[in-house]
Image (cartoon, rainbow, N blue to C red; front, side):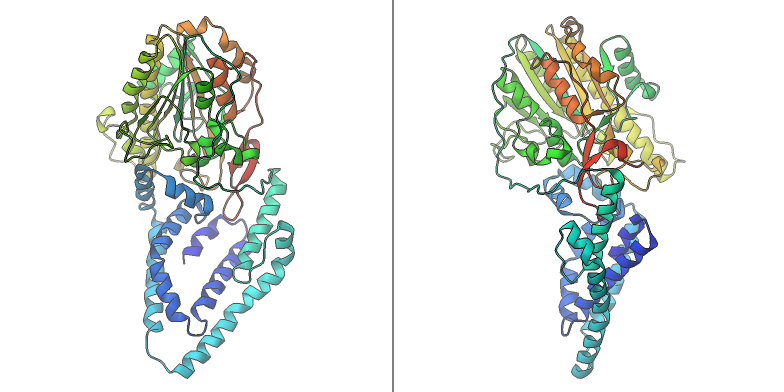
Amino acid sequence: MPALLTTYSFSTREDVLIAVVAALSSAGCVAFFPRGWKAACILTILALPFTLWWCGAAAVGGAGPDFETAIAAFNTTVEEAYGAANFVARLPEFWATISFHLTYLGAACFYAFKKTSNTYEAQRSNGFFLIFLLPLVLGACAGRKELEVAGIATPLVGCAKIAIKAIKSEKESQVTGGIELKGVVMASHKYVRQKAEHTVNVDKAVLAVFIIGESVRADAMGPQTANRGPWSKALNDRINAGLGVWLPKTCASSNLTLNSVPMLLTMTDALHRGDQIVKPTVLGVLKEAGFKTGWFANNSGGWEAAERGHDVYAGSVNVDPDNSFATQTNISKFFLDDGLIQPAKEFADANAGNPRAEIIHMIGSHAHYVNNYPANAFAAQPTNLSSNELLELQYQRATEYGTKNILEMSNILDESRDPAFLVFTSDHGENLPSDNNGALMHGNRVTQQDGHVAAFILWNKAFVETHRTDLIKPLLSAPEIAHIDVAKIFLALAGISDNPIEPSKPIIWATLGSGAPWRAITCSDIAT
């Protein structure tokens, strides 16, 4: 029953049939293996927490959690986990699957422990075992060649489904022109990040702010949203007045936070994804160049984004690998992103007249959207909206409130006598019901909506006089830029380089769907 949640993402009826047969055969072999039925029932009961988690992931994205998702689950914040659980709890396919699963499991356990003749039990078990084994044997024969080509071992149980994955991955690689990334080894949680090389000294006073939003898709911020609310209008008016610029549509490093944020901060592209755990972050580069540095986080980029050695760490999420929540005293709980503004201002003011840089990581527009803005910030929600319409409204309100907080940060720029600028981008985008693309939220099958993000720059009048904004001109005419280009902008405007920034090839670390591997994909090849 849980396996059926993944079949709607397959492209052909043949794929669906093979997947169902493989799931039935694997389960049947375990359940009807001689004297194994009782053990199978007990193990299935013990596995119920995992089954619930698996079904939640499959109901949202059409694929059960893989190793990457498991790593993400263990590194997520309580708020993020709560939001995901609330979202899953509103999906009827999740509850239908779990209900059927528990019903059949109860029946299976009842008959497993019902007393029967030992001779009959042995005969029945042996017979069913052979029946269920046959499709797997045929699947092994049919998928042998494709598995060998893909370099995948051929275990007997489940090999039919593995064969589907190998065939689909090979086809999708040919169709999309995506680049297969092999041999990436997940490092342990041991801190291995290298210190930035000392290549340049920045001695001129400047305030550099890098804001990372959450789930802000490319069309969620920009001139097209100027009429959404007062804060979006104020942001657009500021840019039209020459105190900022909208950047082109930006291809995210990944559509999953714990992949995208470390890659963004270390300027790592999807072809070299393993480097993000060892390369210094942009804040580390500025620290070595003579900046005072502060990291303020209300969202987690995972352990792969953490970096030691900065002057100030604050926020509800700890990004200092040398401190734990138990020992770090400057961790405070920010349920809303406006809690980040005061510590960011205090850090900027305390180091006025010097080069200083900040990373501000917001929870922004992350699901559960309604949790990310105060109830009194907007008018009461209409009572005649469908659940999908209400979800869309809450996303827009969360993004509008996020715009308010960014404008509050821009006030810090304006109050500074030093040249000051702010670079904004999001970790990834978001899928909404109105997209009608069969995907929701983010992190599973990559789409144009969750693979692309908004990006822009704001600055004060003193920064205009430095003429460093000329460095970004080659990017402004590009139809699309990459996440790493935004990180390069941050360093260049801060004074690390005087070379104009040319656009990079937009590629993303993602998966094209259930059974497909995570790999580097050219952003222009992503389907809607």
